[in-house]
Length: 141
Image 1 (spheres, rainbow, N blue to C red):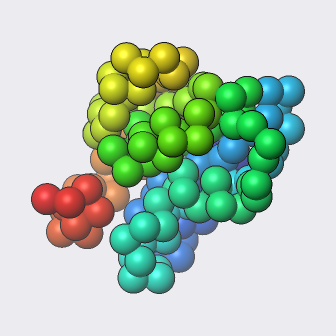
Image 2 (cartoon, one colour):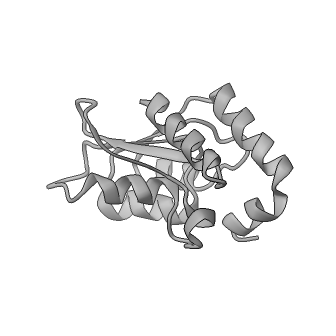
Image 3 (tube, one colour):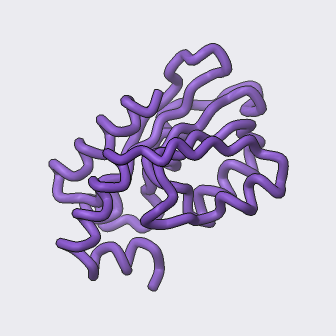
């Protein structure tokens, strides 16, 4: 599942954007939607990887058994989306470069699995080093 999110992150980077990708799966592992951060490309601060994947998944009867997979720990905005719609599990590629709302999600009963993926850590660290201004804008600093 993480491979899909990583593909999306690379797609975002190839478009000149921030390399953060996500995908939403059902409880059986069927892909529902995939997306990537497009804030830079579309000049829209609301298009994060998780929101893009969520929108592309379309309306579901319930989100309790869905799994949001993302290359980076979700920010507070995306963590709010997880909480609002009751997504039951979040798989995080990494939380080294940014830990976002991971603890808040856990405290709220969401199952969070942090894979500490070296590829995810290195991809975003390289982007931040090369583009500190764009990164700081994305996280609201």
